[in-house]
Image 1 (cartoon, rainbow, N blue to C red):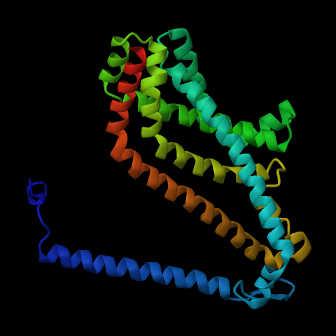
Image 2 (image 1 turned 120 degrees about the vertical axis):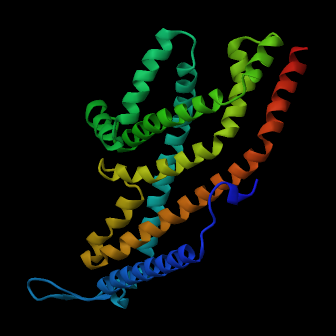
Image 3 (image 1 turned 90 degrees about the vertical axis):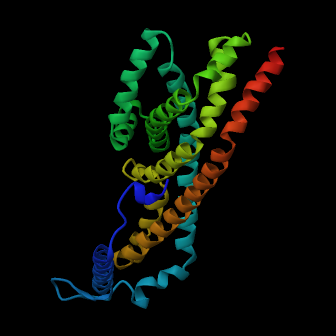
Length: 289
């Protein structure tokens, strides 16, 4: 079926209007970008007459050659990755438990789990961090880890549940027909396929988890943002923008790498989902025989 059967192809006037709108939008975006750069580059004069050079002035970036800055960056990044790794492992474990409990045939398990999931999904992460820190007295690290694990575990659990429900019913029936129990069918046939199918979504959620570690700044954990911005106590407030720029670049680099990994896995899993489904049922059938 040709695309013209779905919608009318734009005529000369419509194409000209779209071209003009694109040119105007591009010009406005470039003008806004130039205005922001001009504001950042302009010197600032305080109320007492002190003059501070623009953020692109060489005197505002000379700290980049100081090893102490990069030691703070490395230390903060390691702290961020440590919290993210532990929280990601906990979120995966909690997510698997939530997904299985939500799919339970017993209403006394399924219904309370749904209520708990909705509660954690609607609870702000920062509020959970503060509650765990003040009530449970766990310390900044575990307050951040537990809050991130529970919140992201609830989201991962819903993703895995959706992945299992999206599988053809024949997968479950095939497992039951070869003598497997419902639990064995879910663990050996349904869950591996759902996990692979939802892996890009899970990795994308891990990117969010990594970014949310910056909220641990409030509870006193020395992650990337806190470690780097604390350097202003030694260098002065004039370098605050430079320090924030360093944090932004590091976060973007790590998150873009994880996003690329998610897209790569999406392409890989998209082309092999059918092969994995057949291989899973065949392998389980051979073991049962």
